[in-house]
Each structure stands twice: as structure tokens, then as C-alpha cells.
Length: 150
Image (cartoon, rainbow, N blue to C red; front, side, top):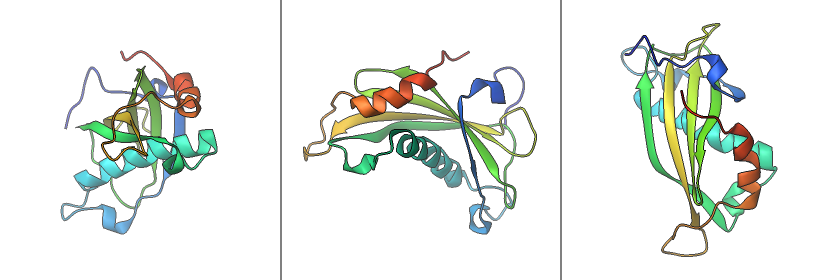
């Protein structure tokens, strides 16, 4: 677990959603299993894209696939407390988007964890899944989330 400088706060994020933790999310040590953090990151990003575009993003000719993901842990999270996810975009390229997702529990202003999540857009009709420019519908909803990382 980390602490001190560089620990993100609620003010670092733009879009928010609350997710419910489940009994099965905790591991034998009584805190959220590491794999669950990555599920929460994936849900935060893709739920935002679904809601903001109003589209079934799986049916677009270009889809975002995860090319990179990581997590910094600051404090334990666990069932039964709900988790608030904060979302921000650090970079929008020609074919990729770099997201940061903060996980918060309770009234804490400091993130319990922060994820980095990189989508690379590929041609969903091409079996080789070659990279392709970000669809205009996606670009229109990720650019407003763009912030420069501190």
C-alpha cells in the first residue's frame, strides 16, 4: 500500500458512478480481491462509454481493446461498502485512449486505489484486429474527460 504525495483525490476525476460490492468480491484476507479492482476499472470505463454515447459499443465497427492496465493500491477496500469510481482521461491519441480510474469508499477524499487503463481501437470486422482511428462517437465523449495528469 502507498501513501503520501501523488495519492489522488476526488478533485482529480471528472465522471462518477457508484458500484455495489458483492460478498464474493472479498478474498480470504477479508478485502477486495486484486482481480476485482480490474473489473471495476473495466466497468467504469465501458459503462461511461455506453451511457455517454447511447450506443451498444460492442456493435461498432471499431472497438476498444485493453492494451495496458495497472493499479496502485493505497488502502484496502471491501464488502459491504459501495465504491465510487472516478474517471478521467489523460491522453487521446489517434487510435488510443488513456484513462485513470480512482476508487473511493466512504467519505474519504483520497483514493483507496487508482487504475490506469489503455484502450486501443481496432477494426472489429478484421480478424487481424488492426488498430484504427477512434470512432467519432467515442472521441466525442472521451475528449470532455481529458485532463493533464499531475
